[in-house]
Image 1 (tube, rainbow, N blue to C red):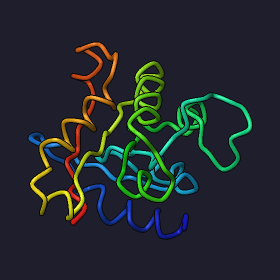
Image 2: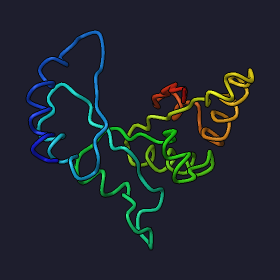
Image 3: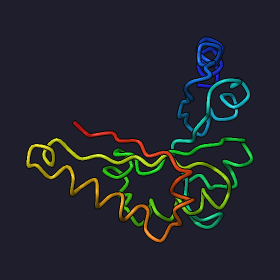
Length: 153
């Protein structure tokens, strides 16, 4: 809720001040404005976006909407999105390109399932996710992204 977000920001933001590290949180769209308003030391990331600026994408959050709220980062490719909403490396790639064009830093999540890990397929799964998610992107663009390894086990 907005109230919880404000309380969280008051409690955590000051503790995030550091010269040696960057700390951030991902917040749902409905709480982003409160999080951005309360952030002095934390990076605020959206939890997802759509690659199209407008259209019939009910429930999706466009990059211009994120810009208007003032977020600097956006999580893409999260395992829950890949599993429950069928996000693919191709759609993650579209999101990454659109975010970079808008000056928002993508936080690309990659990681294997426990079954893939147990089968010894971790390296292939991660390589495939990176190859697909970063397809046709310039090295400078990729260099400005955050890659988050988050195994699903």
